[in-house]
Length: 559
Image (cartoon, rainbow, N blue to C red; front, side, top):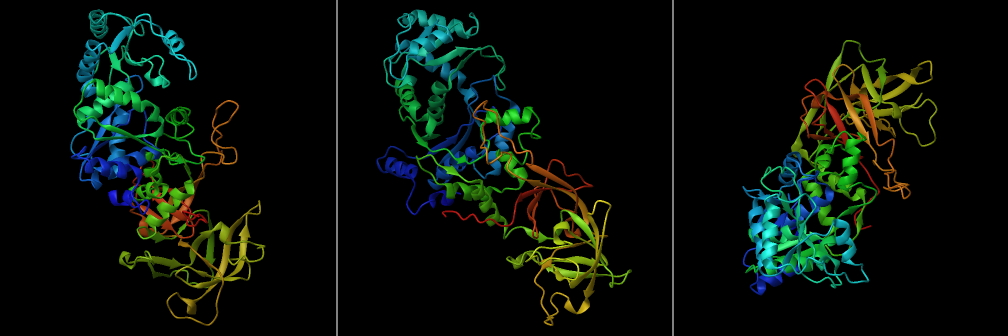
């Protein structure tokens, strides 16, 4: 993984250059990185970049990578999210060792750190309301003004803070604030809140605490406590770095961590915000956080993406300080490249019509062989059953075809893949004019592999044998978002959803070779795309397939 990150460009990325310099100057003996998610939702593709980057750097420098939950806000956090995040990080191949860290494990340390700041005259208890604090803060162009409670004595602040901890005051009635500079050009440094009163049960500490630290205060303490050397964050934390440095410096850590910011991973026309994904889940627009139309890591896994494809996607997207937007087509390119040598190739008819070979014996079948993957001979061959009654794709037959249509139509001859030439002789339709059956004759001299050279055909179509094919469900996906309108409606902030984002084919037939396929197992359905077995809806009696992506795209990375 580290090697993949390292080779994003011919030269090292800017984070590696910083680490190299720190090692050279003796500022860092052993690299320690971390991934610090808040357990308030499922991880998405942007988090995958951070996981792959942080764990990859630790691996590259023979260091340590910590998985730590920033669980300082019990209002939104759930054990369900903790479990899903652990699963996602493991699935991506990030090695965080045997221990999982929690910010809540350091609540005693954080409390003592706050007491230390009070004793140094660097923190005070403030009784202003939230609205008043906002009013006192000032603006980007005007300085703030001091709280009337800023000059409380150290003794009074220590007493009030302990009483806050003991639950003597109502929620929201008091906060603990750092005492820095209300005239700072950086609003984050204008006496920020570092503790608030909140009577909420915590998923890890229960009801032990009724005061909780704010993220900007807790995070640097967590990093310093764990010995993190390089705290790698996304760009929105750049303006918070002075506060991060203030906390570790005022608390006098001997080897304070260094915060470094990099650009987030953005995908065009894709929903990544937890708030919006949560709304889609709650409104039942999707069937959960792992709906294959989403780009949560669990959804991508269910859709059929692999850890290798996501690592390649991060590599090609690059590590920099400049914000950029990647195309979903790049993600599809990466999974195609990964699966083309891994996935077995089989025939599946997604929208079937019957094909009757009229001159094939009624009571006879035969076994044909085909390569499981012509690009990877090590995957071997499989047997297929051929007989009189087959299924072909509805799109592979037309009564009145346009020019350059080389598939089956009355009087035309095509090759059945890995089988014989067949020539259409007739067809049947229902009362609505829809084709229900196609009749054809086959030429026994044209068997695949026989060396037949008597004539050529321009079209090859796939098929399955009716009696041995396995009936399955296939789900075909489009973008969840209407790409012409963009993700969000500018008038009301709602999402512009694509009503055709999923098409369910309940009458899909797959050759018998994959009747025992397992959840998450992926295949190339010839001419239809890459598909994976859905873990959630597949049963012992019925396979459900999710299409990962189509087989081809005009997209080329870097073009």
